[in-house]
Each structure stands twice: as structure tokens, then as C-alpha cells.
Amino acid sequence: MPQSVWTEEELLDGRRVRCLAIILSTAGCSWWRESGGCYMCGYNEKASDGSTTGSDILAQFEKAWESYDNHSIVKVYTSGSFTDESEIPSAVREEILRRVELSGAKMLFESRPEHINAESMRECVGLCPDLEVAIGLESSNDRILGKSIHKGFTFKDYERAAKIALSVRATVRTYLLLKPPYLTEEEAIDDVIQSVSKASPYSRVITVNPVNVQRRTAVEKMWKAWAYRPPWLWSVVEALRRAESGGSLLLSSLVGAGSERGPHNCGSCDADVAASIDGFNLSQDKKKLERHDCECKGKWRESLSEEKFAVSPGDHDKFFSRGQS
Image 1 (cartoon, rainbow, N blue to C red):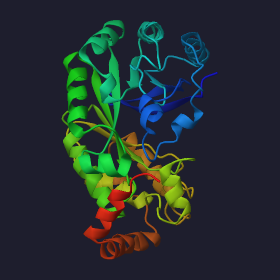
Image 2: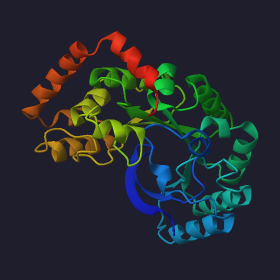
Image 3: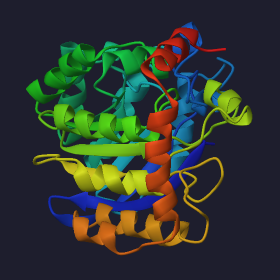
Image 4: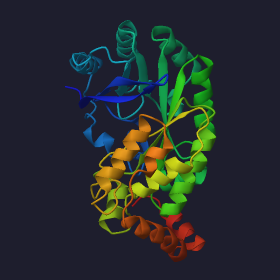
């Protein structure tokens, strides 16, 4: 069985369309297997023990494909890299691409930059021309990528991979992270705004993902020690409101919104603010982000000032030197 299958909506060519999203169980992300992975990522806890074969993966896809019903976009995730041979054997990848191409849907898969090269991308586009490559950039700041996220690549690596995808006429979707550890709330907002600007020349879509505290991660250890708070929903609104994405669609994926582990405000306004963000995703109308207000918005503004006052640049240097515990 696949890890998960669901249907969602988003914009494509200016209209709302249905998307089929599939998460396949594989051996997991190679960066996770080799170096421990990113500090906030717990998706690989559900990865197989390495015994999953190509036939198993294809059987998972066949089961998930039973849910296909004229969806305009098919998203296939592996919690790692679709073009990593150690996760998805080439024959399995080719069969999945062929199946999606025959349906007429746009295909999206995710890969780290080191698994994106001209040869593999030409092969993928040859099998499924309407292709989008998703890259989890997280931040355009190399110091944040290295010290706050343990990402294992730089912004230049992302640029190289994005240019390869664009050169074979694939489109690019860029994922950014709001509030990785060791950043104040205001620094996190500013980093997303800067990253949107730097990623926009390469991206058809930019998705801002506020951190949710996943189990058995370095971020969870900090959270349990009262050393980390997930971002406010007001911070998501502020980042989307101020970001300039050029011609790129700007979205935000809210996982666990309103829960103590996910992006949240005071509790009473969370559902309304999350709904306004969802409304923005499907309209790109920033006025929808201003629909709701709450007394806790003042507390959020105070927290921005208090964090700035309480944390000095020297403190940041000490935090950044700690790495993962």
C-alpha cells in the first residue's frame, strides 16, 4: 500500500484544477540514509527498511492509481528523490511516467539537486513532456541551509538543477521553509521573502511551508525543551503579503495548522486565518490575507520585537555552532 493518497486543488494556467497526490514508500531519502537528513524532516521515519523492491513500489503506484479520476496534476512523492536510482529503479520510474503521460495529466515529482542531471531529465521529459520538478530549496541563504537545516547543498546547487530542468522544457516548483531552527520569527519571515525573490526566476510555483514539528527530529528535541515554537500563522500571512514572486504562483502548504506542533496563533482565530491562506492559494488575491483579525495579532507583533531584543548576533553564532544534538 502507498503511504498516502489524497486529492487537492490548486491553480494551473489560471484555473482551479484537481490534483492527485501520492506518497510511495521507498528506501527513503539518500541524504537521510547517509548523513541523518534535514533537522526538521521526519518523513523518512516511515520509509522501508531497505527491503522494498521495484515491484513493491510499482504495486503501490498501481493501488494509488485506482484513485485517478481525470485529475489535471498527478504528484508523486517518495520522501526523497524520484530520480535517485537507490529509491526508484529506472524501469519503475519509466513505467510511472508513461502511465501519467497516457492520462494527459501534468506530472510532478520531487528530487534533490544532486539527483537532477541532463541525461535523466531528458529521459523523463521524453516519457512525460508535461513535467514539473519540485526542489526543496528551503532557503536561498547558504548559512541557513547548512547550519539551521543541514540541507546538504547550496543555493548554487539548486540553481544548477533548476536550469537543467528548464533547459529540457520542464517546469520547476520550489519549496521554501518558514522558520527553521535558530532563527527568530522576524528573521524567518525576512528569509522567506528574500528566498522567494531569488527563486522566482526559475519557478512556475513557489510553496512556502511553515515548519511543523515532526517526530524523532532535531526540531522536536528543541520543541520539547521549550527552545522552539512553530511559526505563527500571522507570520505566514506576513511573508505571503510582502513577498514579490514575479510571475510565479505563490502558495503556502499548511500542515498541522492550529495544532501545537504546527503553525498556530492563539487557537480562537487559527481556522479563520488558515482559511484565508487557503483562499489566497486558489486566487492569488492578497486581499484575502487581510480578511481576519484577532487580539493575538498584537501579541505576535510584540513577539517580533521581543525576540529581536532578546537574541544578540553573538547568541546566533553560538546556536549555529551547535548543529544537531
